[in-house]
Length: 311
Image 1 (cartoon, rainbow, N blue to C red):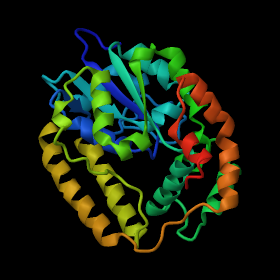
Image 2: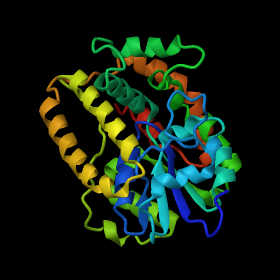
Image 3: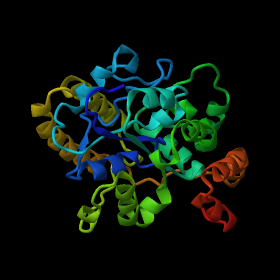
Image 4: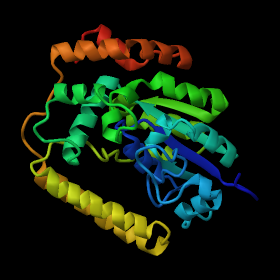
């Protein structure tokens, strides 16, 4: 447990490919929030999980503070590791390590999220550029043991089975579940709701420009972009505890991101699910979506879309 007069923490804990980067960016702009030097510290992930951070909670909670070297007078410290939702022991790690914590989840239509993962996997050269959506589905269904992160995309759309662990571990006022659809339709309302949850002023977003961050795209040269992303990861790992370097490097990275994505984006149509695949996936997720509705006492928006023939 963090000792002394512990700061408040806001953790964006999931889910992957559901605009966690955008929410992290918007909250980082708030004057009462200080963001971690790396968006995904991955500090509380299980050691067996297929992605990892620089440090692990088992090495000592004091190492977590290295991600917040520049945080002095802000009221809330923020980080976003969307894989926290899926890591079996993470809820208990967070409960035992941080006294004053609020956890945010943003959930997306599992079919749309799966397609986003498919595009992201191509964008980052995790799968062959020639692999079809149906082949990506089949590849997911033949995985055993401890598959890599991108080959868990299908299973990890079953939110109910994962979020139940957090609902059983934390008090209900410590958890906020948001929906991707609400972010798309009205980001201002969603951010005001988030601010109320964190008990911080929401007026700063009245004239805020909500840019989409880390969108999955179809690229002309995914290999070049993959090399750039890997270099960026290495730089962030080196500078995560060097506050004087972080701000100028972050500014340079934002400009490079915009330039590279603008110049390498493909004009080709993005792939869509076939009618048969869409029906199979809806059937695959149906039981878990019912569980999620029961747990949250709320109906996820994608159920309405499905019933109305959306998509």
